[in-house]
Structure formats: C-alpha cells, structure tokens
Image 1 (cartoon, one colour):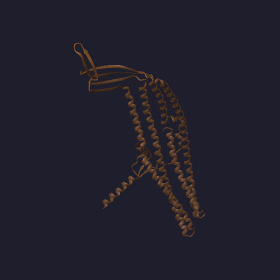
Image 2: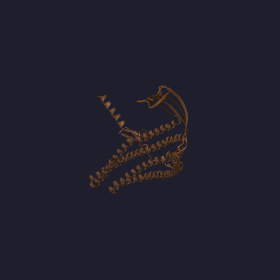
Image 3: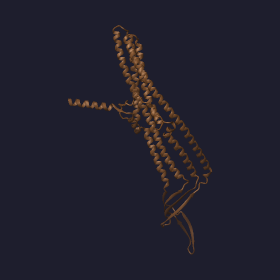
Image 4: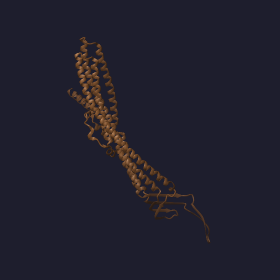
Amino acid sequence: MKTKIFFIIISCIFVWSASAQTYTLQECKDMALENNCKMKNSRLDKDIAVQTRKQAFTNYFPSVSAMGLAYNASRGMAQMDMTLPMVGTLPISMFKNGKVATVSAVQPVFAGGQIINGNKLARVGAEVSEYQLKLSENEVLETTEKYFWQIVALQEKLNTISVVENQLGKIYEDVQVAVDAGVTTRNDLLKVELQQQGIESDRLKVENGLSITKMLLRQYTGIDNEHFEVSTSEFVSPSSPVDIYMSPDEAVTRRAEYGLLEKNVEATKLQKRMTLGKNLPSVGIGGGYMYHDMTGQDNNFGVVFASVSIPISAWWGGAHDIKKDKLKMMQAENERQQSIELMEVEVMQCWNELQEAYKQILLSEKSIASATENFRLNSEYYNAGTVALSDLLDAQTILQQSRDQHTDACTAYQVKLSNYLRATGR
C-alpha cells in the first residue's frame, strides 16, 4: 500500500512538472525560428535560389545531344529507273530501311555575355534570398516577442488582481465587523461586494485573454506542451536606453532592407547587360560523330564545326529593350534613395517611441508610489472614521489602475526596445 501511494505521488509530481514547464523569451524565439511555417518556407526559398545558381553555372558546359533513328518503309523512299546499255531500263529502289545515330557537343565561345551575366544574376538571387531570410527572421521574432510580452503583461495583471482581491477581502471583513457593531449600514457591505464582483469580472477577462494569447504563441513557436508558462524574470524596470542609441544613417546600412535595395540596383544593371547580350552575335564550336546504315552498308564518320548566330531581326526591337532597362535602372536608384530616407525616419521614430516608453515607466512608478500612499492613508482614515467607504474603494481602484499602467508601460518598453534594435540592424 505504501509503495502504491509512493508511485502515485511521484506520478503526480511528474505530471505537475511537465504541465508547469516554463519558457524564457530566448527559448520561445529559438523555437519560433526553428518551427515557424514562414521560416521553413524562407529556408526553402534560399535552397531554391542555391539550386538556381548551380543550374546557371551549367551553362558554361558544352551542350551535348544524341539522336538515334531506325526505320522500315513499305517501299524504298528513293525510286528511279536506270537505263543501262545492252540491258535496258532497270527499276531501282533505295532507303527502304536503315539506321541512323548521331552524337554532338557544342561549346559556347561567346554569347554576348549572357552566360556570365546570367550567373551573376543567379548569384544576386542567392544573396537576395539571404536578406529575405533575415527579414523573415525579424518578422517572426517580432511577432514572438509581441505574444510573449502580452502573456507576461496578462500574468502580471492577474497578480495585481490577486493583491486587490486580498485587499478587498480585508476591507470586507472590516466592514462586516462595523455592520455587526451597528456602526455602519449594510449598504457599505454591498459596495464592497460590487467592487469584488467587478474584480472577478476583470479576472475572467484577463484569464480568457491569457488563454488565447498562449494558444497563439504555442502555434507560432511550435510549443508542444498545452500547459506551459513563460518566465517573468526579465520583466523588470529597465535602465535608460541612451547607451544603445545609433545614428540613423549608420543604422540604415546595417539593415537587411538596405542590402536588398543594393541588390535590386545590381540586378537591374545585370539585366540590362543580359538584354544587350541578346542583340550580339553568339559563337560556338562543336564536334560530333555520326553512324548510318541506309544502303545496307555501315558508314561512320566524325565532324567538327563552328557556328555563328547573328540576331538581325532582333535588332529592330532590341534598342528599345535596352532603353527600357536603362529606365528601370533609374527607377531602382530612385527607389533605393527614397527607401533609405524613409528608413532613417523610421529609425528616429523608433528611438523617440523607445524614449517615450522609458519615461512612461518612470511616471508609472511615481503613480504607484502615490497611489500606494493614498490607499494607506485612506485605509487609516476609514478605520478612524474620518472618510467614507467610497473614498477607500476609490483609492483601491486608483492603486489597481496605477499597477496595470506600470505593467502596460513595461510591456510597451520591451516591444519598443525590440523594434528599435531591429530598426538599427541589431
């Protein structure tokens, strides 16, 4: 019996520990980068770009082809009459059946730079996929942090609600004693009960919000434990962000978006060279081997050749294609400059919002100190009979609001801090 009880206790401890698994912010971010669908597809896009680059490199190799043919006609494909002296006219039929096989290889010597520039374009595409993967990482991390800090904020608000419930419980006991003593009316007791019911409603709303946000974080990061918690150890009043400031012009050059803009300009230049190459002659050399048996006798031979292709008719529209690519280059340059200017504005906006969020924390801390002292004084005054119960309940409400405002301010700061670090390429 004792052994059975021991195993039951051990099992309960194991279940409780599994259900109460706690994740830090970094653990959630690592899991999101590993398991999120957007990250998986971005990594696949990168692999696709790598394969595209490898495929483009094969254009340097000779083009090899082979062909085989065997036929059997109902009659000879070449019919003629041949007149011979002393013999007369003889009908001749040839090529009724036969076999043909060829193998050839063509090595491009000059293709107007299309092969070289095509490989450069493929390289740019692979580099673009790297930047796009980084942007996907930023987006996934931003969303993960948003869910994480929402959960922390809701948990902190539940803690505040628990404190308020204890305070109201004590107030209710004091009022009950006063009612029993005939010092006050039952109306004061009803006021406390109404306040308690309001707090109970607040708890229900916060718990529902917490449940939904946890489901979102779980789906986004791939957490397989339905009953998990997040660590609140990082939820502390931060120090001034002045040490992490970075000038906007320096910050912009560190961002993945800046790299994408540079690659876009480079790609338009290469595309222009590709268009120009399509209008230039292409030269190739090759060799081959042929075998045929069309006359009842084996024949085989080798051949070498050179080819020159001049796209004469393409010149009619080729000049306009080149001009279009020049205009696209100008567009890419304009977009690059405008995007850089907008990113600099974004960096400054994120910095201003971060500073504002920090100042809001300082203000909320002062509010908590004032609200705590106000509640303490009103508690003493109520016990002394110098203030009404409504004043005490108002003081309690103000204290709860100041605590919630501090929680919201700390959460907002963490989000703004993450936004600023990403806006500065960190």
